[in-house]
Image 1: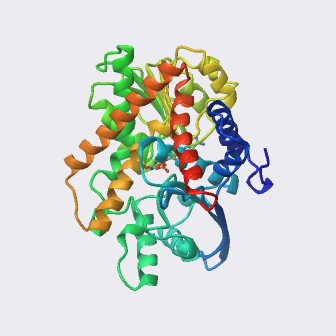
Image 2: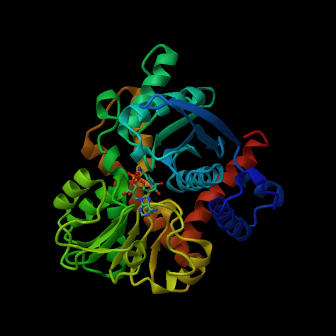
Length: 420
Ligand code: NAD
């Protein structure tokens, strides 16, 4: 298959390998196959930023729009030192399958800046974001491409993006981004949505496996937006969060971590390591702990051919995008581990982002109970659909979820013609 080398990266290759496997199973013809797989367009921009010490640093930023067949594209903005064009393209591709799987009228997109937001001041983060948004203006818009937060970005980042875009338009345009503060048109329940969705699906998987939530043990890698809200939502059902990891390392307490205190410790020290009462462990040890549920909620490629045989969980809930490599999948598909694939597991975020966009376009806002109720209805329906399809076709859960999503995109492209 002809893949432009500009996207070359292990993560893009992984997304392509997953897609090719499904396209083969679906019998998508060669011509349809290639254009369904490759991103529609990509923009690379230079972002010069005046730093607090008076120097100017130039950062590299990207936005990739995978397809615009159903409507606008949708996807997060990532600030992380490892961001590359290939990674952003892979994440955009996964967004496409995810949106199609859960039935949203979006194609996938993703953006990113190669930087370390935690080592930059608020002022530097703001100047970077405003300049990046300015560069994106030609290709974003409420009917074209709607950004949202991802790793290293948050509600404040979205507020700066919305403000920069609105200044350009000459009037407030809340629907240009989702995941923004409620005070400027954000949706109630959006901040918590991805983690809440993860917790909902973990509970459904526990039902299927007949694991009692009360006392079930959970390990989480990543204590940012997704990991944090998933931990709190799960603990409300009586599960015990026995270990949590982040970019500083990991902490373990078999009796269960006190989440409020851990959150205070992280707010103070900027990392989980050194949390009193818990044992410091490495990220490698974290992933191999005995537990009922393992939730990678940080970066890609954490469950690999090297460590997959050491996993001791019964459920692998992929809150992060792309946490499992293709080599690891070969082992998992024949194992007893119940995998909730990323395109399903973390879809709560984009589902409530869609609700936010709809509310902004109508200027008609919903209660948090309405948001959650609609979110859980979509998750329930999609979870059942993936399980039934997987059972009927004897497919691994990831293959079933991807097949449903990819098929919808390929069919829409076919009936529209060559343009989209
Ligand atoms: P975040 O920036 O809020 O938190 C990221 C967490 O991961 C932090 O605790 C950070 O310390 C940790 N981390 C970073 N690098 C790490 C490493 N190398 N090893 C271990 N831990 C590391 O980001 P987030 O929004 O919570 O996103 C986490 C994952 O969930 C990403 O894969 C993202 O694409 C995915 N996701 C997020 C959303 C959303 O709504 N925010 C929606 C869908 C999917």
